[in-house]
Length: 462
Figure 1 (cartoon, rainbow, N blue to C red):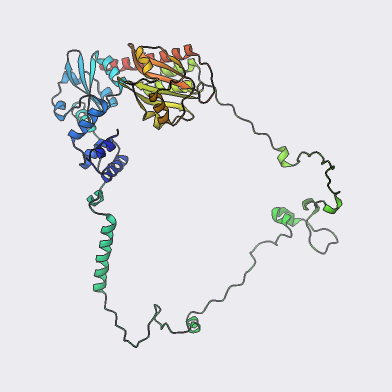
Figure 2: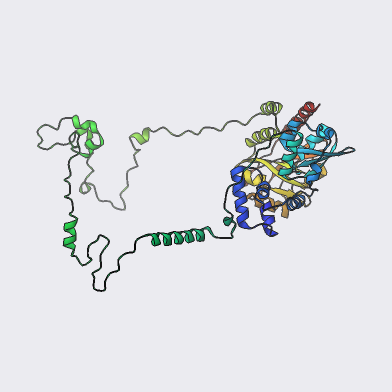
């Protein structure tokens, strides 16, 4: 459940307060929790309870960020701490307690585990505490976000429309008290109109006071002579051509004269035995128009081209984009899902019908049987139909698509641990046998690229 819905369900904030916090977030950026804290609608204890329930890990307090030993801070370099917004808190044997905003990001924890050689124990923290710690220990400047100056009356204690009406009433009363009093009409006096004249005046007298100006005569627009026919109006160059010899009226040239339609009385009557002549092909510009040619789509990248991209990647997002670009030309729909300890989260997608926003908001629990729980047993790939399990039906219902007949999924594994899943399918009744060995090689190359990224960050730490 999202933070706003969670708070409203427990009566911590109102709907108007949530709208103001969302407006503040859209204007100044950051997380919604930071806007709620800044506006005073949320306290740290309530936020810690929500984050702990959401990620199912313990939360951090402000005291845990005080007096962190320097040797613990040096375990994570400044570049990595700034990139992922993580702060090491404590070392206990071979375990490193790590404060982070998204404990579900398994790739970040694996990267920190590679760098430090320790087992990472995640602790969820608010954005405010993390930014304060990054500024204190890593001297990273913190961006100060202001608050939209909205009146407290917007919170629902008073309707702004009522306040405006009250102000207008007060202003009208003040103006009326300062203006001179209008003379009272006597009982027998005649009523005066807005123009200062009696309302009993006839219409003719009123017209004499306001004479109607004479209408202007229409004049011909300056320019050359008017066209003599519709053909000349369509073709201005025909004006300079001389009229036909011996004619008393100007007539259009023969080249521009429309052909006369055949007379109906000259045509023989149609009978049931009459056979119509075959249709003649049309002549003119329509027949001379070139036929439209379909431009073939670009060829999908080869495995060698994707290997070069994976070799030069600098972030994990670039690794996933290379995988999806390779699958986009071979599958109708493809996606990448991140695998955490107890759930699967969408990362990116390609293909018609897949919405990137829906994919990123998709979460499937690994505690219930589904197409994703199949890899908890260490399978190398899955190719086959989608079982009619409730979790699978809810998954495709959340994507707004019907389940395909067959899917292919290949896991990305580091140290026998599944980090992500590559997904591909064909909608409808289309069925093509994929080259499973090819996709397994692709996934192996992507896994090596992720390991290289982790080793690069480890080199910067030494």
